[in-house]
Amino acid sequence: MPLPEDKRKLADVPDAPGVYLWKAADGAVLYVGKAKSLKKRMRQYVSGHDERERVPLLMEQAADYSFVVTENEVESLILENSLIKQFDPPFNVRYRDDKSFPFIALTMDDPFPAIKYTRERHREGTRYFGPYTDARAARETIEVARRIYPICRATCTQWKRVIAHGGDPVGTACFDYHVGKGPGVCVGAISREEYAQRVRAVAAFLEGKRADVVRELEEAMREAAANLEYERAARLRNSLEAVHRVLERQKVVSERPLHLDVFGIERAETISGVHVLLVREGRVLAGNEFVVEGGLDVPFGELVEGVLERYYADAPHVPREVLVPQAPASGETVSEWLSSVRGSRVRVIVPQRGLKRDLLGLASENARFALARYKHRTRYDEERTNRALLELESALALPAPPLRIECYDISTLHGADSVGSMVVFSGGRPDKAAYRRFRVRLATGEANDVAMMREVLLRRFRRARSGDERFATLPDLLIVDGGRPQLSAALSALDEAGVAVPVVALAKREEEVFVPGWDEPVRLPDASPGLMLLKRVRDEAHRFAIEHHRAVRSTRAVASQLDAIPGVGPSRKKALLARFGSLKRLKAASVEEIAQVPGIGKATAARVLEALRAAEEPSQRRP
Image (tube, rainbow, N blue to C red):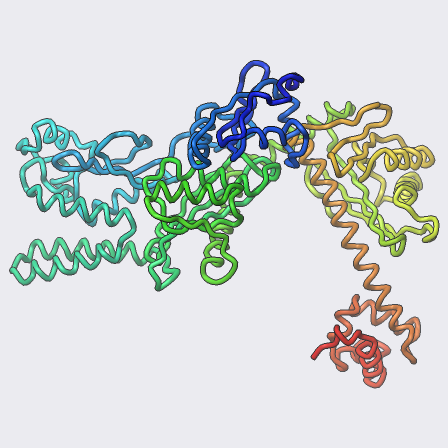
C-alpha cells in the first residue's frame, strides 16, 4: 500500500534537523534516516529525486511516516543509531550477527577491581575496553594481561567473598593463587596500593600503551633488585618477558606513535565484510572483523557511515584518527559525533598515499578474507544461487529452474568492428569454456544494435540446428541486453532458426525484465537473488563483448599500418599479428624480437619499427 496522497505533501514535516521513519501499512518501521532538513530530505523520497536504487521499492511499501526533531545533526545521528537498534528496519544497513560486541571490563568501584569478559556495558563504576568482534580474541587478551599483571577474575568465587566482606581477606586461597596466576587477595598476600598499581598497568596494557608498560616494568625491576627484593624482581622480569612476547607478535607498521583505527570494507551483493585494524603506538594490536547487511545495493558512503555508527556506538574509546575507504555520507556530522565521544577532535580520513594508504590496503585485504570465510562457513553463494534460480523460475514463469543461462550483448563504435558476445552460466556460475564470440557481418551502413543482435542469435541457433557440437546445448533461459526492440529481434531470430527457448530482455536503466507476451515488464526486488544473478550475467556479457571489441579494433589498427609498409605482404602481416597481437606490443618490441618472426629478417624488422614509430603522433612519441 503506497503512501496516501494527503501524506505525500508532508505538510506537517518541519524544515529542521531530526530523524524520520518510513513505515509499512501495519506500522512496521521500514527505514530510519537522519537529515539536516527533514522536509527537504523526505520530499526527495516522495518526488522521486532520490537516485538510490532501493528508494523506489521502499516507497512502494511505505504507507506512513513519523519524525523526531533534534537540536542538531549530531543528536540526530545518535538518535538514528538508537532507533535502528530498536526497530532493525529492513532497508537500513544491518549486522548479520545482531549480538552486542564483546568488551573487557575492569570493576573499578570494587576494593580490589577484577577483570572480566562481558557483552553488556551499562554498569556504573566499571571501565570498559573494546569493542572486540572476536570473542576468543577478547578472552585471550584477558589471559595475556593476567599473565603479565596477575589480578583477580570477576568470576572467581573467593574474590566474590572478599568483595562481600568489604575487601577483607577470607582466609582461603583460590585456585588461581595456588597455581601462581592470582594475586592472593583472598589471603591478604597483596596490599590495596600494590594491587591498584597492577590495575592501572592492566588498563594501560588494554589501551595499547605497551611502551609505557615496558618502561614501568623495567624501572620497577631495577628498583626491586636495588632493594635486594629478588623474588619480586624475578616476578617483574617474567612479566616483562611476557610483554616482549606480545610485542613480538604484533606487527610494527611505523616508528611514529600512530594511534588510529583502519576500516577495510569488501562488498558482495547483499552483504559486506568489515575488518578493523587497531593501531596503537605504531603497532597493529588486533584486527576485528564482522559482516553487515548492505552490499552492492547500498551507496558506499552510506555503508561506511552505518559501519562507523554501529561500531563506535558502544565504544568506550575512539582514536584520534579513523581511516576509511570512502568518506561517510554525512562526513562532518560523523566526525563531530566521534569527537564528542572521545572528548577531543577526531579526524575521519580517506588516505590517498603513503603509510596510511598501505594500512587501508591491508585492512581491505583482510576484509576480503573475512567475507570469504563467512561465505564459506554459511554456504552463502550456494544458497543465494539456489534461491536465485527458483526465483527466476517463478517470476518469469519458466517451466523449470534455468540451470543453463545464455546472455548476449553487442559492442560497436559507430557501426565499425562490431562484435557480439555469448556468455554461459551453468548452475548460476560462469562456464567460461562455453563462452563464444561473433564478428558481426552486417555492412556498416545497415548496422544497428537490434539488427546485429538478430544476426548473432540467428547464427548461433542455426549452428545448433546444423549439428555443431559447440552450440548443441540449448539454454533454459536466453537473455538479451536491451529492451523490447532487442527482445523482438531475439524472437524473430529464434523463429527463423526454428528453435523454441525461453527468452527475456534486461534493460539497464531501471533493471526491468521484458517477457514475451507480457504487457508490463517484471521488476524484481532490489538486491533479490534473482535480480543479482541477472545483473551479474548481463555485466559479464557486456565485459566479454567490450574485451573482444577492443582486441578487434587493435588488430585492425595494426593491420592498417602494416599495409603501408613496403615489403610487408599478407603473409608477413599475418605472422606479425599472430606474434604480437596489438600495435602497442609491436611498437614496444626490439628489432631483434621482430626479426625472430618467421619470414621477417632484420632489415624488414627495422623498416617495420621505423615506419610504426614515424606514424606516431608527436604527443604520443616516447622521449
